[in-house]
Length: 237
Image (cartoon, rainbow, N blue to C red; front, top):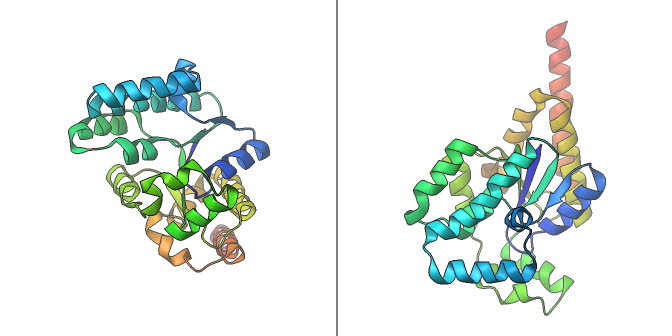
């Protein structure tokens, strides 16, 4: 099984990835293209500068999509957590010039079994980054100061990517991890639960969870599946 963790800078991806790797048997793939080519950080930066300085958007996207494809194949044989996958590649690299390339990958190779999109507002993400390190280099990135989840929405709707989206605005890091672990346990328990999970946490429903804290969301999830079990038992009787 392959799980992809997605979201903008400061939303809590790294914390979730770390906790999931410690709480499950899943292995982390941080940057699949670096893992595939066994690149050092310096080598990776050099190749990135060369590609973005000399080649078209097709080559730029292909470089990262190749790493993504290798992660997909790894996920067929072992349980992996992917720290940023197709959605992030689409977010950073998609343009009209390479749209056919993304379509080709999407329709021929597919997606992780489950993509987990974490959301938080601009102010919340900035506060979280500042709180962990007030001179963090991420604070200098222009993209930090925009709420640009539209490209995530665009890709999810265009390709019907199996996903859950969690508004983490009122959650602690520990609460996000607890919720995701509970969701994954339900996901792996019973195939019939999966459609319910996908419906509850569809990205179009993010606003419904905007003012809810962890206990309220966890209760909603629990009640949904308790009612589902009652219905199944009643139907069997």
